[in-house]
Image 1 (cartoon, rainbow, N blue to C red):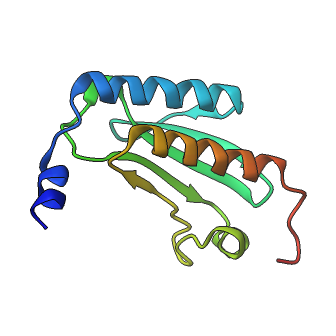
Image 2 (cartoon, rainbow, N blue to C red; image 1 turned 180 degrees about the horizontal axis):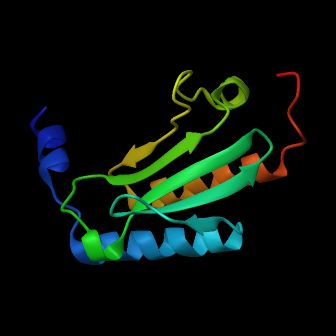
Length: 125
């Protein structure tokens, strides 16, 4: 059990965090996500998907906080439709990514967006 605790206590570091965020910003640009005005220090985006609007929130490079995990926050605006495909929170529509592996997080997020964009319209799931 000690190994797991050591991994969770290991900090990612600013260089890795900046690299992670820059890759995510490029992915969001490729998917034509629209940056929106934020009331917080997070960078926020909206993306039209087959299950409705998806809100995406990322740390801004200027306000990076030390962390042990790579995180992407997403929230569907129509949870009833999205939960049938993604198991998002049935009330809030949240579907977040938290992992200690940078590349795994990026690949999972990119696949997630790709599925949301390329699936046929969802009506009766």
